[in-house]
Image (cartoon, rainbow, N blue to C red):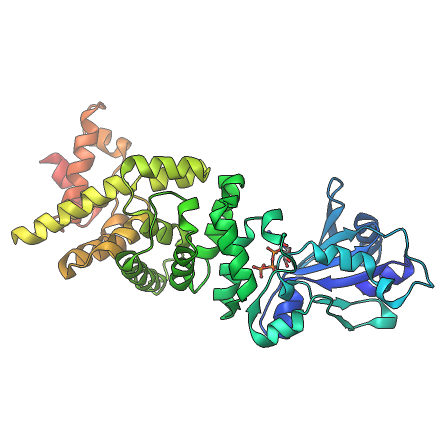
Length: 405
Ligand code: CTP
């Protein structure tokens, strides 16, 4: 249908990018990107007349997104029409504008294209050796300036290499090392680095990807004191296990696994270092606040270790107050970071049970029981909560009874 609409507008249309790459690798990819030679927005508007969908367009970039009723999205970009194109063009000029568009892209494996116009429907176009590199499992840039044009590609190279189980090609590796020596990444803003780092931390192969970033000496662009060593690797393995454990509880709570891994990676930074990195990466305030919970989380962990060492078992309410106020990601991080069986058990109890314990009485309930409102209510609620956590009371009536006493 995309092809038909393009045909009526006399436009060429191509499927491009990750979708084609993954199609050839027989891997699922639900992001559809198309490029039309001409005005992509006009194309999307014409498409919207033939099918039920919404479109969002960005005039500045000449791009549009077609959103189908089931939420499925198609990104449409425009390739500039080259002035020398004509119906009688020579074969090598025939696809010049799509070729030109693809030439700006990062790696050969991302430049494979499938024509969607009726007369050439399904034809695979491979201008830069993408098929060869898919076969040889190589990540290669198209030309020597690629990393200078966009240094975030250093991170992307590692991400694709690890995700696909490929290898960065020799010349590309040389260019990457040169780009690191020239500190090109410094010219890129922290926000774009954060974006790349987040995508890496969201990949299943997070450990090998971080190891590769270390090998390329790329972590220093996240923070000069950052290193990926055996201890951090072990901690991430432990974080993976912890997050699988939590997922199997099926609580339905959403949490950011990438943040959990980010905490592991940044764990050895000082408090000042954490502030520095969160400013540089321009973390959203909600993530920055979580990152700044690392120091209190370390303190909570220390307290738990001390208690485990003393042989003096804590009450449930003690455990609750060690961790209360920390976000779920941070508590999972604490659990991943504890190599003491006893401490892990306490944290897991906090996650599965204690943090959900609530007092049933509210302020009005206390007033009904004859208490005068005031700051001491806080102490009353705390006493009730602790009694509940420690199993001393169970029902609403138990709470009332305790208040009366
Ligand atoms: N691209 C690029 N340089 C970048 C980012 C993107 O050349 N710094 C190009 C790539 O060729 C890519 C396309 O833009 O194919 C779309 O980018 P993105 O959606 O990030 O890549 P995908 O290949 O779709 O990757 P993923 O499978 O992770 O979505």
